[in-house]
Image (cartoon, rainbow, N blue to C red; front, side):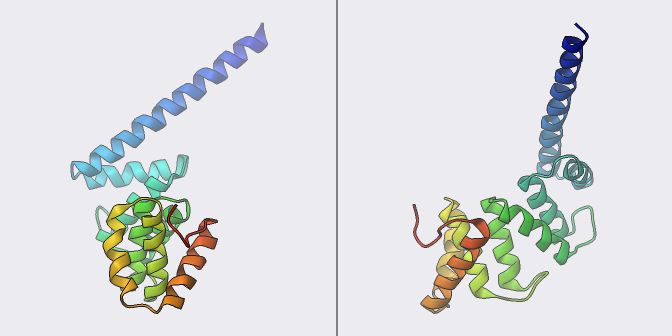
Length: 163
């Protein structure tokens, strides 16, 4: 009987934690959309400590890149985008590509930027297409293939063709 009560208590606590996490995610997204960047940043930092998610890392990257509720810091923005991009979030892959293409928080590397744009496009993120087209016109074919392979290895995906 005591065992059943303990299981019930644990399930209740787990349900409460999950509900709180879902509400917190909704709150930081809404705060950001409403322009309440102080609240958004605060909730994102809390959420990052409790359960890091690619979306959280990407949005923290936006905060650091644009200096929203925190001093602008391209290195931190790059690092957050990189975490989210490696986790497979296409929006973060585009953001990481932009940082690499423009040398914000890292050195300029058009081929690597292309690789991240391609990964996002490969995942169905249509907004990456103009970036892919722009850089594909500037890079030699062997650099494009190397970039696809390099990012593909990081993501453990075959990026040579669109599925």
